[in-house]
Length: 180
Image (cartoon, rainbow, N blue to C red; front, top):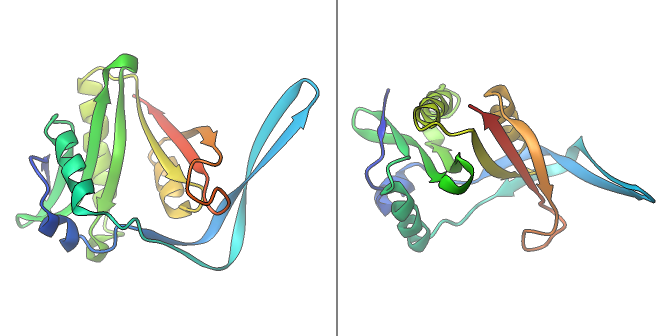
């Protein structure tokens, strides 16, 4: 497996990666408590009655936006015999010395082989080389597999945002950061 800077992403390459969503049998339920002089938030891992299936429905327009980010030079691809097996699309945020991980995706047929870990190792080295303070990302409370993966990589949950997604009931945003 070869990890290299990603120069561009075609619709065909993206589609060859397979499903760009996830499934989960659990989710983190967000509870907010308001008292006279304080607010508190807690996340509790809960089993779901049925498997949650997420399909991002990435469009050619989304891929064009990814390519605008890729052109900035902070994104990487994992290649297996010249075939894209995974990607980490990142964008440096100069205003706060961070590297934002926009999308980490591994080919459906190549998952659970360590490719995501290889991509993250490259992203972390890249962020350090650029003197970034942190790598940050956003995921959903329903994406328990991703949350577990990022925690294993050393990320911490550093923020929550309710009502950011369409229905405001099923999914809530979880922000994670890794100090580099």
